[in-house]
Image (cartoon, rainbow, N blue to C red):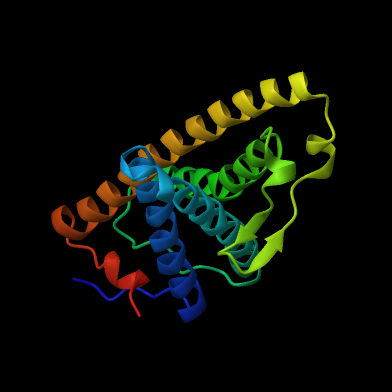
Length: 186
């Protein structure tokens, strides 16, 4: 296997920290219906806290990506694979922003938002989006439902892109014998 140029340490750290956090939010969402009632609020609040953290890291990651050129793809990639990689990575970046933002909007439209302040990991009060909270209750409830559905659709899109990303890495690593995973390891 070749030794292609690697991503920077910062890019590698952001990639893996965000991957773990995103997987954590997915696990929390998948388990919320199965936890005892007294733990549901903790699960939801932790999901929200991780989502806001991912949004902050996504901003950092985008700035890093813009200011630091990533290594070129290995030479064995077909032109269509290079295009597909660029499109998939672009869509992943879009979802890194749309998922937390749609979740934040969804949470801000929650009918009980005013009486249940949002706390990041129970430590810091996080503001809700004021113009959403000030909407008429019926409209706000409709918006809450709509935004929840949009957030879920973005989540399913992320699942698909995540699986394609992993399958592409496995394909290049195992079938094509490219040093793909090594590019993103410390």
